[in-house]
Amino acid sequence: MRGEILRAFQEAPIAPGTVTLQPSPHTLIGAHTNVYVEARPQLFEMELLGQSIRIEVEPTEYTFNYGDGTVYGPVSTPGGPVPEARWGEQTATSHVYSQTGDVPVSTTTFFSGQYSVNGGPMIPIDGRAEIASPSQTLSVWRSESRNVADNCLVNPSGAGC
Image (cartoon, rainbow, N blue to C red; front, side):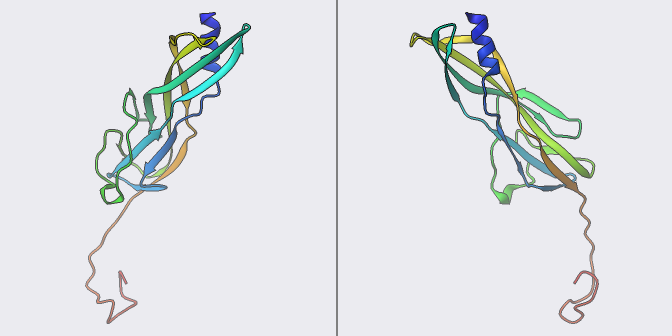
């Protein structure tokens, strides 16, 4: 029965984590882009081999694929949001891009589980499920700044106005 429960756990329709990028949908070369994932515990009830099975899953680890060949994880932290005023600062799950272009950013969430047969005690499941999130496209831009001497109030069509 344990093998059947492990298979049911790994084949359950576990909802993937949701990836959030800060800033998004654009970021700059050389700036930290905050990437985090939100995943939630889930519950599945089913009949298996004539028995009533309850499977509880919870996210325990995360792997971040930044889309430029860099992968971070698995790690126990999903990261988290930062206020807009702090975008560009380093976080536990941020990444710095070194080239321009569009990159597909995604995560994989690893879920651990436990089960109960016919309302009995919860038993840990030996194994885990890997659920990939849909990727999000992030455009990495280059920024240039220039100093200009024109006064835009005097010359509205001047450089930089």
